[in-house]
Amino acid sequence: MASRAGSLSLVAGVLALDFANTSSGRDTAEPVEHLERAADLVDWAAHAGGLDGGTARRARAALGRDADLAQTVLRRARELRDTVQDIGAAVARGEAPAPTDLDRLKDFARRAIAPAAFAPAPGGGYALDFSAAPAETALLGPIAWSAVDLLRSGRFERVKRCPGPGCGWLFFDHSKNNSRRWCDMATCGNRTKGRRHRARRI
Image (cartoon, rainbow, N blue to C red; front, side, top):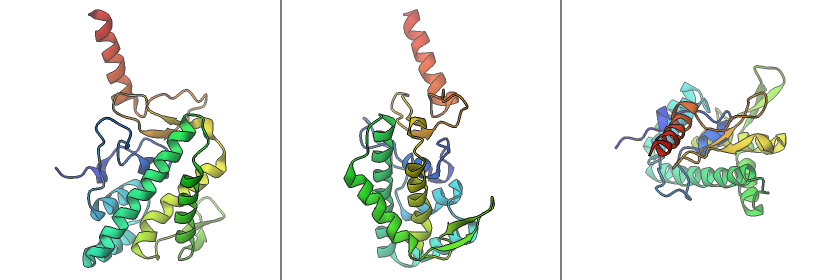
């Protein structure tokens, strides 16, 4: 079955949390993996806006030329994703993330910043630009720093985990009154409500 990485719903509102949702999580009954190949990572990053078209083409070419590099980048991507999942799940439960997870995230961010450049940001000021970096950093740098920015924001009450059956996706609640419950009302929300309705009729 072809990966859906390049067309997954982007419902988290934060790049790092959308990346965490490229699998259903190791603690779900039937884990679903959308990053089967390094090319799937490039597809997802381009789809999610983590890198532009030119950077995606360069990353795809580099990974296509070097199978060992492709495997290393895929392994590192899954490590970063699992780390963000574990941090996000802890925060959503109202718990402090494990120090080992924070150290891993710090290591990803540290490795990414060296080849990055500062560039003017669309809204003013400057932002880290990973587009000219090697493939691994171009792909994973924006994700690692998105996670760092989320932790720095301190708005942990808005990090939530979807309670839909078999879901567990993470998201940042941007609603005015912090009332969002589902990753997507059209899928998990309506599906759960339908199940409850049918149960009441039995």
